[in-house]
Amino acid sequence: MAEIGFIGVGNMGGPMARNLLKAGHAVTCFDLSAAAVQAVVDAGGKAAASAEEAATGREVVVSMLPKGDHVRAAYLGDNGVIAAAKASGSLLIDCSTIDVSTAREVAATAAASGLEMVDAPVSGGVGGAEGGTLTFMCGATDDGFARAEPILSKMGAKIVHAGGSGNGQAAKICNNMVLGISMAAASEAFVLAENLGLDHQTFFDIVSTSSGYCWSINAYCPVPGPVPASPANRDYQAGFTAENMLKDLRLAAAAAADTGTDTHMGAEAEKLYSTYAEQMAQGPKDFSGIINMVRQNTGK
Image 1 (tube, rainbow, N blue to C red):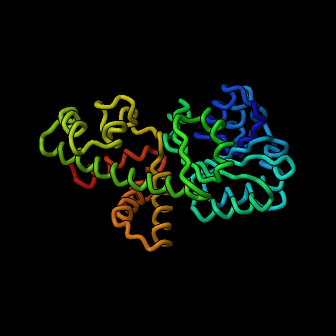
Image 2 (image 1 turned 90 degrees about the vertical axis):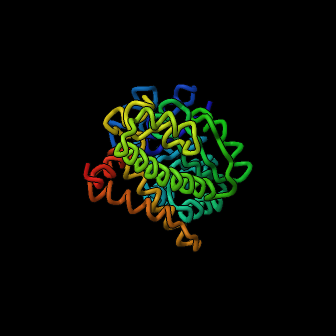
Image 3 (image 1 turned 180 degrees about the vertical axis):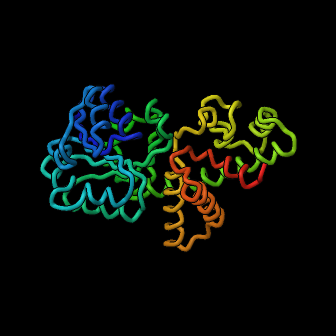
């Protein structure tokens, strides 16, 4: 079993670290939240006083951080993870969802120090992190992916090699652009169905087996009832927050601008989630709660 340093053990990283412990790995973690660290310690892990300490002497370092700036701060510089990991030749796995350019820059810095780095953002939300059923989209060399896969398999059910450095991030933001667009469309369709006199279950039974079939309806239905596991049944307690969806849509928009790609629907979804998460202050709610904004705008 491996000695693993884990940086960022919040809502997603915490259950991921605990799944590594369940698999028999030794985990030393760091987070700015003492409570988050304690939850991993209570599960059998150890605490580190800094990201540098968590990385020093570990065979593998995993991170799950909010933004690209946090990844840069953790990995780069004289007291960063790369400097700490260089002596032990650690495998570096960043599971954060960040911009492609940052992922590639940090990976290039790691490579210059003789280290393999994998960008491995996830899909599956908190439920997937807790259940160990996440999907990992990996950007890495063939050797880096081969080393990372046995570790990632203890935290997820599907591990995909998307290509070279940064391609994991590319896959994630493209996937979540689809998700943001489809949830907005599903929400509008359910509200329209309500106003036309269709009840939720009847409409779900039809659309979930017809051409409107999609994950946003079949697995994560934005109205309570048809899919018992969906956040709609828990007052939209977040599995994946609206603010995180907005973050990913903005990453997609930035990538579209960088590449000159026309992503009209992605831009419209970004506007909708900006209104819902920021102007309506619903950022901590689940992203599927955007159906409530549709109802409010409808005036019924």
